[in-house]
Image (cartoon, rainbow, N blue to C red):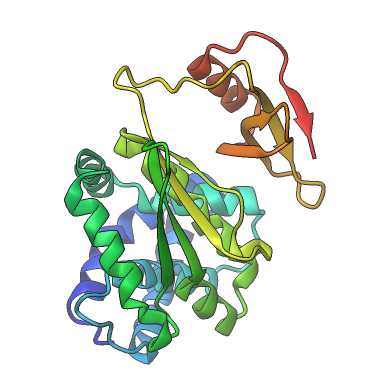
Length: 276
């Protein structure tokens, strides 16, 4: 892949926000952060140069370019941050004002005929069959018309991060799906599995939000719960079917304030049960 073009543009777009995020989220000084970014740029260009060019119809080129930037930075920091810190760092680095604007524009087009057809075209392309740094996905519309799922069976980010010994940090990137959906404003993101955590696929579900901006849930058949990982303590707020026990993931929560935000959003007043 040639550096000139999108990769060069992404570096310009995110250089300052990544530098600032190292200060706010990883505890580096401004001078240390600036030096890390200076050292990361040659590595970023090297990673980009080793990538193949993406097909014109492949919409995931931006995803792998952002992964290359993240990997280049990780390879130039001198300490191993926690997953929570890296998740916040990546979100702060990517979610600058231009990206938020982009998410809002995409949000307005979410669930449109063009949006759905674009996903169907991407599913049919199966670009990862020819390019290991791209993605293969299936498009699954919800039968009740409430949205759709993009189910990924091959992930270019997983491939690239494995090659540079950074696979354990992929979940920090995965969480951005929740953030971008929230900023988009028209969908809530739901997920049960990720390839990064050993799942059979990555399910990226998008459910339509009510026009009021709030999301109702079926109180007769579901109850709000916090699902906690016994491995890393990660907590996800969502709803559990009281009949089958099936869990519907809504959002990652990192502290009590975010749990309270979840409760306020859904009008929950009772104590939320924690499950594992």
